[in-house]
Length: 448
Image 1 (spheres, rainbow, N blue to C red):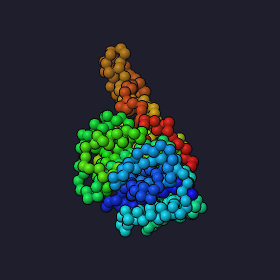
Image 2 (image 1 turned 135 degrees about the vertical axis):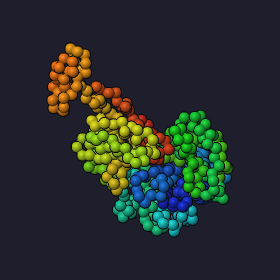
Image 3 (image 1 turned 180 degrees about the vertical axis):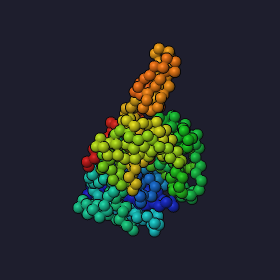
Image 4 (image 1 turned 90 degrees about the vertical axis):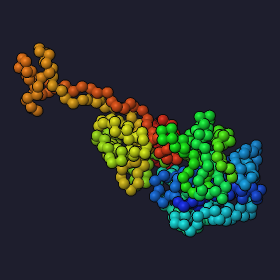
């Protein structure tokens, strides 16, 4: 057997725990057995609309074997460096089988087993699973029984506790092709501090993002919120996301905080927009996400709480209600400035409701804006005429000259918006939300 892939998922609960921390336990287990990490450990976000997700719907995977080539330090666990090798040699079946069982024991020991909705799973396989498994898990709802049969045909070793739903994320994390990645360095707290107030200097986080421009979503200048630290009793102290792997390693040393117990750099699909696919309205089902291009057909309505909704018709004439929620900050003001006839491209997701919850708006082309009708001005007297009634036209009070109703004028108004791409404020963005201002050029096929 060659290097072995391990995927894990569903180890945490709303009350605590963290699957990324469990993966660090597997790194420690491998080191103790003389087994090396091949490539980068992976943090893979899946369909953000799934109702039974714990929090961020992340799954983890890593590849293990006997390393070859120049090693690279990707972390530290229990005082030992985490070394990664670019390629790996074959390991024996006996060693691999023993490692899988030990890894599963570590998963069980580190999971919130017994709490509602916590169903840990481990998938082990000697080759990366087909990418189609990832694309389905990030865009749709996966049938667990169908996936279990597929894993059996792939020769995967599967371990579960509770329900089998955790195999979806575990398999998808192994199946992720790793394309257009970002990276996240996650620093963890000492166990005795889990659940207590985090000590983290916000200004040092802001300085780090200024010093290392490859970092993203570290803080929100609009709300002044620091975005690197969770607000749950989980083991994470902070996470630094970046478009290249080296800057977060350097930036970690500049963050002022309580003591870091361990840290690991993960390759991720965060900021990829992989959950989005161009679909017509008729093909957007429950818990799906989409890019939809079309024409605004209603005047936007402002709802209680500052949310804004409008109706969009796609090229087939099918209509969908789009909702821009107040916490996104920028999107409600953009939505409120739209008018019937405007051409836009929107992207977002839905749950059981048929409405699209917006994650971004691209204003493609604006229809002409016209002010209210005005009576014509008399060319002879220079006076503004007066209306004689809706169907009777207008008359000059000075010379008594008359004009028909269609002589009314409507001034053209400057639009409140400009064509362009509008994202939510950073604190309201999803993990998978597209980073760059080019959703119109990154639309992917609906096929798998």
